[in-house]
Length: 105
Image 1 (cartoon, one colour):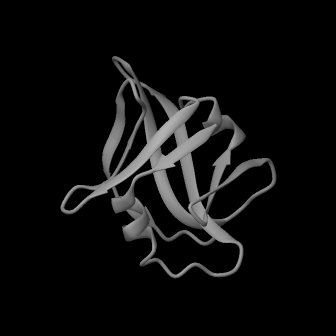
Image 2 (image 1 turned 45 degrees about the horizontal axis):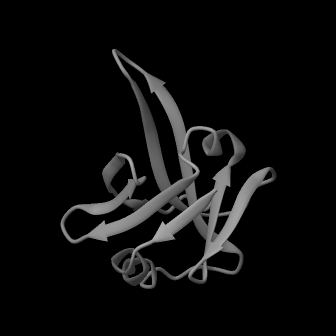
Image 3 (image 1 turned 180 degrees about the horizontal axis):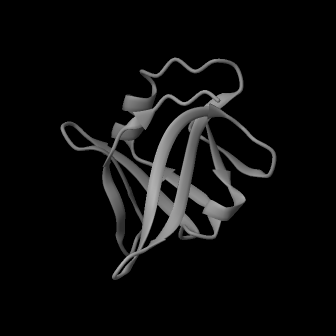
């Protein structure tokens, strides 16, 4: 898995105060309704056992193994003022208007 973080997302994430060993958790789960969609959540947390850990542009990212299966091999994380974070791949937009939750479990 690879994360391409766009400059606007790096700029926004640089305003977050991370405690030691914290990073961004990307939780992605398939949701079944009349169509298949992926429900995605971003939060500030510590790594958990069995997380896939990536460090991109100095930022820790934690993706649960089950979420890795729900995401493309490469995702793009971007940010737009007034719209929040956007997660996409080269082929499709997976979601937008994501806010960064502060779970710290």
